Image (cartoon, rainbow, N blue to C red):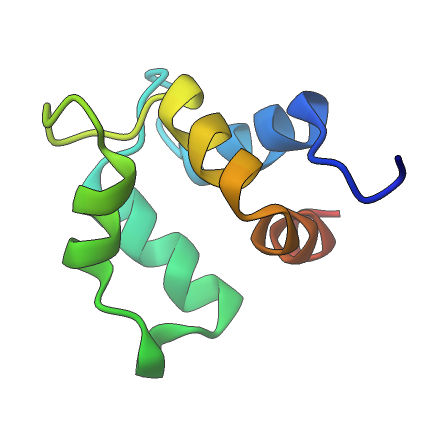
Length: 84
């Protein structure tokens, strides 16, 4: 299925968001990515971060981002178009 989420795309988006390359996305990095995507006016960044950060460590891991994108494939598609 062409519209199914693709883990390679998720990894590419994750690496783009993870500016310092430490393997996790901080609130600051996530906020910057949301701003870069132009979605700041209708997104509560801290609340969205909490939603994605399933283990509550204050960071988004690749697995957590993949879980989110798997549930929201359209958002992954939009993110990939911004990174490409």
